[in-house]
Structure formats: C-alpha cells, structure tokens
Length: 155
Image 1 (tube, rainbow, N blue to C red):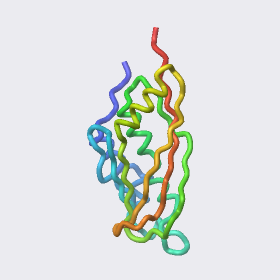
Image 2: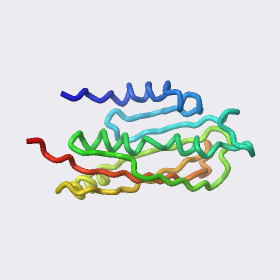
Image 3: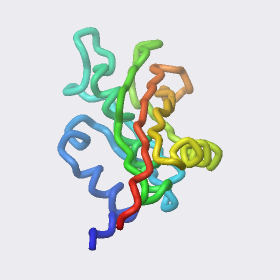
C-alpha cells in the first residue's frame, strides 16, 4: 500500500527547511490544508542578488517552480499522474526587497482537467502567477505547464 502524502502543514514546514529554499531566502508563508492555494516570499539577500543588485532570476523562478504541480497533484487525486512539463518567466521590472508569489487553484480548472483526462488522454495545462514586490509592483510573470493524465485502471 503506498504511503500517505504529507499534510499541507507538514510539507510547508519541510519546504521551509529544504536547503535550496532555506539558503535562497524563499519561505512558504501559506499552503492551504485543502491544497487550493499557496503564498511564497523571497527575501533579498546578498546571496541571491545579481550583478546589478536586484533579485537573481533563478531565485524568482525557483520560488514559483513546484507549487502548481503540488496543488494540482494533491487536489485532483491519486488516480492522476501530474508532472511539470515546461516553464517560462517574463522579467517585468527589477525586484528589490521582499517579493511575493501567490497561487490559487480553482475548482473550475480542476474540473476542466478531469474532463480532458476522463478517457485516459493527457492534458497539457498552463498556469500563470505573478511575482510582485511588497508595494504591488509586478516584478515577473511565471508560466508553468503541467502534464496530467488519468492512471489506467488496475486489474
């Protein structure tokens, strides 16, 4: 019997101690128990500044990287396979100071995925989130594409 996945609360705590996030200054501020939303902060540190003194682009992407997959995987159920397929980032303005990213997975998006994968077909689904400064300034727009497929029934 497969092991039970961790609760959102436990995963949030583990992610905040995970070295790539811990040392990059990334903190998971919120991960909803029903896996419907998440909020992440990236602190400006000497170790994550680029040559011109703004946030390193890799850190901006890393703060957004796993969340769409985690939310969909935990909401859609264990009868689906969910993988990251592609990602894009558009740098809009220089990021200085703390920046934030929020993710909200709607029931409509889940129903669309369920419908598209009902007969075992794969769905390639794009999700988008913004990275914003504390004052609301748009710093970057991140897009992630997920591969989702319903698992075949077991005999």
